Length: 532
Ligand code: G3I
Ligand code: 9MR
Image 1 (cartoon, protein in one colour):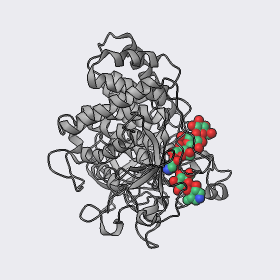
Image 2: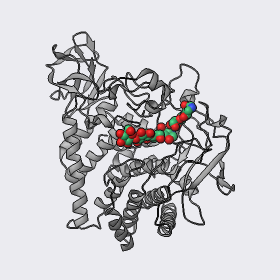
Image 3: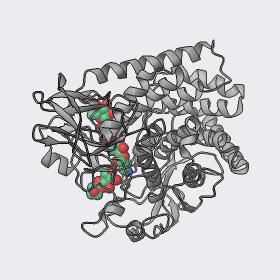
Image 4: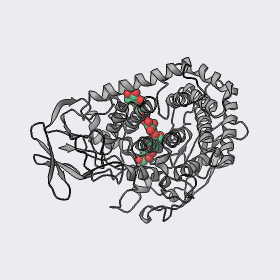
């Protein structure tokens, strides 16, 4: 088998295919004529612990001529791929456009949605406060994932990636997606983020400033369209993880949107400060646990220190107010992962807010400590990748629920290291993670729907699953990826005993390997913005 990035390789970047045949030479052929333009020998046999395979690398980095190619080796032939300066622009647009398809509370319609994927608005835009039984307006925002719930901490991670992408690579967001708000002034990415931000504002209790943890039905619905989900919606209680993550993202949004929509931006900062005031009144964590009669996603988290750290860092960066840097330093002394970019462990976003803050002097001791820590972790990621046949920074234990998020978070980490140092090794290694996501993996499969010659097509995503049999899936959605914990019925039945990277199945019911979420798409938007 010959595994390649099914979209392609940037002309000036290293180009490696992963081969399972170590004997035969491999040939790069022009896709149109079949002419052989490059011959190479398999190198560097590596026993890949995660896939259980002995694989070899087919290096064709010296081929820089732009064109469409495929690789032949023995009787195997790869999927076609491009060599060109910016091969991922269409993918970048597609994984960003997916957020429009994920919108809640509005009917999707042409020309923004292709006819085959339109659906009506969700059945209800009002929820019941689980505790007070009062009604709460909750229209808008993105559906979390394959389900129709909306969860604050998940939203915060997704928005953090998208807003950071714009901050670091604004030039890659000039093309329109297009969406109803396209106005040729503010980039569509920011309009799309505002659709989520304006829903998030409704999750804040205006009296206390605290932020509700989620809004969902009591149980997951069947695999139906949003308009057919007629069960009542409930807003679940305030948590300090949600409140702190909300504080951070609203402060970040203030900064990024101030030049485009000053009034909205100032509203976000006001909301952030009100949420911060709630946190100051509640120094002890208020952690969310699903009540017994609530069976939807919990996004449980036993520590809110990382979220408080991030909140302080973003408020400091947004306002320069010394109270926040003091709070940031207090939180930074606590024991949590200062470099993680997950929905539970969010410390890395706090560290980024400090490292990119121009108000922090280069000789600042905490800044130097965090920078050194960031680069140490980047070096670790490089070392892990060098031991794997598929050239990614995933250790065997990393193949758990949402392993493609871990993959793209690693790429994000490397790209921040590149941003901090300018060292190409970090950027090149991040690119290897894109190759895995887009086909250079043991499944020879692109994990992004509609992207690549062989891509996932049976995702656990209700608006795709509810389409007529044989329909193309909603495009641009990133599957969670291999998960060795076998946490759904299909995985347990069909993947038992397989190596970690093999524990993926493109099956609609495999939510533990093949669901989609906003925070698996968001790091892909961020990473691809460095290569577009
Ligand atoms: O991080 C640990 C790892 O250290 C350990 O080695 C491994 C094996 O024990 O477990 C890892 O934790 C896993 C965690 O995801 C990793 O983020 C847990 O087992 C796993 O249960 C957990 O799954 C979460 C899943 O909900 C179930 O709670 C996913 O992260 C999370 O993305 C997913 O989120 C769901 C929402 O609840 C509902 N909407 C869809 C969304 C995506 O599936
Ligand atoms: O669709 C739900 C998905 O969003 C969740 O990640 C997953 C795990 O919490 O649960 C899915 O819902 C399934 C439920 O857990 C069990 N009955 C079948 C539901 C649809 O697959």
